Length: 273
Image 1 (cartoon, rainbow, N blue to C red):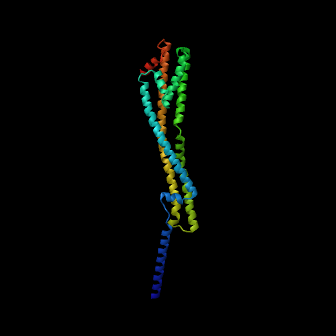
Image 2: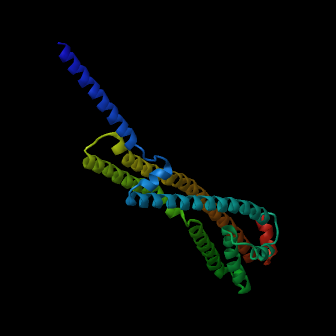
Image 3: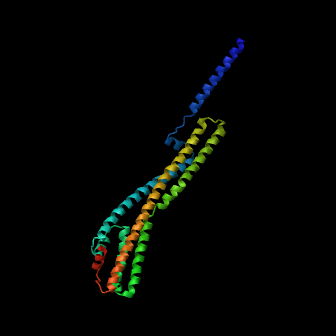
């Protein structure tokens, strides 16, 4: 009886020792660096490519975001200043002469396109001929519409990239996730061991790729929606100004047909009313 007890005690001690050795071996084997840099440098080459691609996309997205935010703030400030000058009653030919020397601006470009077409009509005597005024009015409106289209196309540069990153970055990160999980299962099959030390590196890399995809996509989606709204508002502002300016010129041509003043000073008075 005492012999059996001794055998059981020896077996228990042996099992405990084996369990202790196994735990120590797992602890020793689980020495991977799970920091951000460690996950990157230990990752598979394909996952590294995915990570670099997503980081590059995120940096470029933020570059576009800051640039677009700065441009829109500046354009709105300039628009307020120009609208104050336009409705102040200053002669439009003088305002036009000042505007031509100003930096590029969509609202100024719209005004300049309309004024240039108007001055061409005035110099040719078209504005004083009632039967030709409709054609001049249409040319002025088309010139301003073309200017608005070109300026908005220039302002919308980079928006396609933000939309593309917002829609594709999560799937690119998901591809890295799938590849990392595949590596984890390959490690399990190669070592015939399902311990955390075997699967943790691959799973960590996979989740890191997913996180990078979300880091790139979320700001791109948020600011794409913000900038789309702001650009639409600015386009409406340009359309409203072109309509008002066209109405002023049309009213002036109607007064010319009735024998009123034919100078640009009258246009300035109409703008101030």
